[in-house]
Length: 190
Image 1: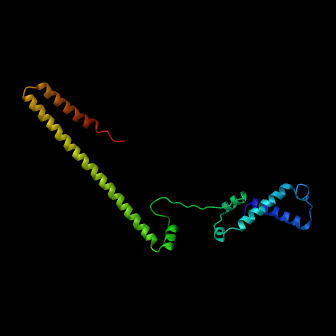
Image 2 (image 1 turned 90 degrees about the horizontal axis):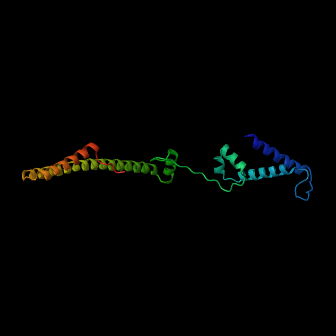
Image 3 (image 1 turned 90 degrees about the vertical axis):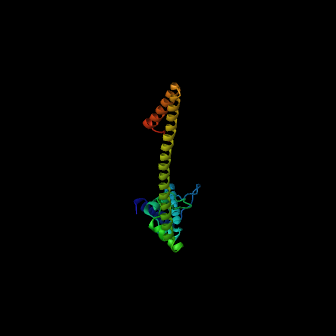
């Protein structure tokens, strides 16, 4: 117990003793003459805080920590308190799994199966995506090779017919295009 709650309890006790031993006449402000105004305010705060803690649900009282009690004692006008738990990852913590089993027998086992199925699905999806990318790359290389060969055959045909300038232009564009693709690579989509 920290010194502040002890001090508040002492002030409350002193206030109660003063009230019991003397019949004080309120002055025009409505404050007892024998009790200092600040002491009166402090004692009222303590009474409010103690009554707030006393009215708590027994299950909630068992979960109160010293830090939480300190926060409640600093602000007695707490109307409601909320507790939130969260977790990150595919499986809930063991305590929560036990609660699932209490609500639905075999609930934790179902959660494990669901998680395992999800993981299998994710692995299959990634594997399929990788195989698809490899297949697409192979198909693109074969198509590029076929187009390059067709253009080179066309250049040879035009060169054989005597149109060497056109044949040279086709061959040059074909080779420059292929070289550019292999040297610089394809642009990666962002």
